[in-house]
Length: 319
Image 1 (cartoon, rainbow, N blue to C red):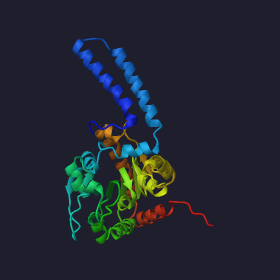
Image 2: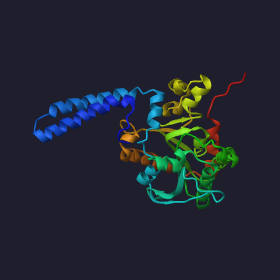
Image 3: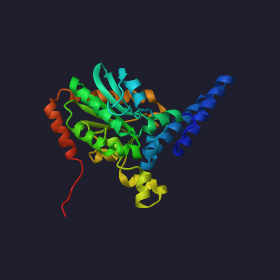
Image 4: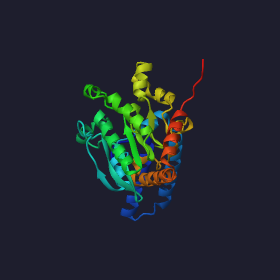
């Protein structure tokens, strides 16, 4: 998003701005500034490597929330073809925080479901900041059952701060809707690939994240609670969010080491928000590979392996 800069990105962007100024000056004045431009470009490259090799968990959380990152509909547009959106849970309403429908990935038909944030104020409100109501999770489940009926794989794109915690959502069975998705996704008889593309917040994320392969973008986050929420509970001080982020192990590499996710998908230099097209190409290749591994597996074995996969997460010690 133009004009939105994270603190640790500022030195890099300032140098890139100077490079653009020199290029413009060289063009206008027909001056030979090639050596100076090359020197600054090398400096930018070194600075980028240094900054992004040493990001803290909190800085990665800031990148995951960057308003310029690609959202679910961007990935659908850039990685899939023939998308037809389907609406409604057939019970209460159409929750626009969750989008889904039929599409093709490299010619393969599938059902895609994603959590969608908004770009401007009007869309953010319409999408409820990607915080779904129960009808959103029930819409998602309806589409998964449709996929199972036609033996099509399922792709879910996770990007939410969490499920909506409002009174109406609780009255309509928010917890039951998420729990039902966990149960039903665990026994779907078709391949399920999950891609955590931004924020993976609490049960709101988990309600779409039970899959045979769980992929996670390099600068995405995935946690039981937000760092601010954790800091408020433990220290009664949301300003301690950076400490909480480090302790919670919310980054892709931490979660891969812990066995919570299956693969870390690299992002372009500077993060997905710097190059949507390149990020889509990288993610598409990872998705094609994941589905290619899963499609030959018999349905009974798929369900069995999915159950075993989630049972293996975590370490338990007897007292």
